[in-house]
Length: 360
Image 1: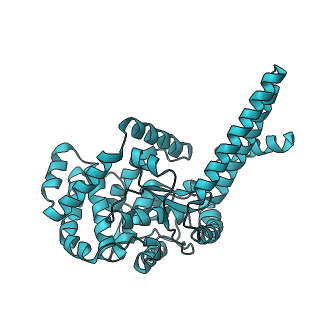
Image 2: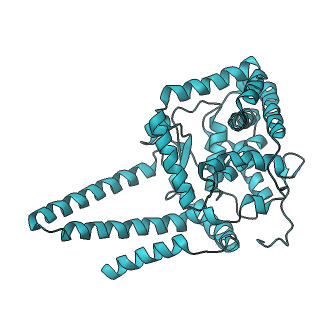
């Protein structure tokens, strides 16, 4: 048993630090093995209205506490640390197995060929005024679409929205050759309060490949959040790439989803520019979109705990960096660079690099 546990820990350490070429991950995992896993797992988890992640999380927490409690009592009775050290060793081995399952079920997608290399993207950062102009473009689209989007409304069952599902598959075909992903239903979770307190919109369960959503999301936020999380399910682990894929997906769907996409982009650009430009952007909002933006601000102010929010995002920053996303949470903002520096054909269709590029 000790040999098996040591082997699990050793294998976890090896896979954590081994320099596996991104081209290998792209070809054999992200484009072949992972789509097979995702289509099966998400099809199953979609059958359950509850978040299976909650069940696993509670069970794991209880098992851990029971094991530590028993080990502590045994160590106290024996007046030696052996029993609790053995428990800690078992937990370390269990953590190694969990990490291996994480990598093999989804986590290797962090190591695939970056979007900046797979698409025809111009080098260098965009000019500040270009970023502002992108924000003004987003505002113009919000102003144009607002009345129609609100008149049509948001059904709230995104995973059954045929237009949004088809849009995801269109974007996948434009970006790569992997089979289409199965979209996941947005589920409530026991982590809902944590999402509210930290300002997190959602996440995927990397072990069951299901979508967990903030229960306070406003109707006009949900289509983009769904598309963003579906991008993760499709194997785009990097946050900038998930934002990019989610934005392109929502743009290809119906008017309410398009409005959600442009609203996201306005919000993202506003966080990238200085105070003067932010004021300039806000002044361009018409009354309808301005009300929606103010509703989001009110939602965040109502629910977030600043200290917990900072701690939560700091932890996520370290998680991303541990998974080889060097920019950490700053990677969210890189979607602006992708949109501005990538080359597009009609209909916001990104142009892929030549087939002879090394990662192919």
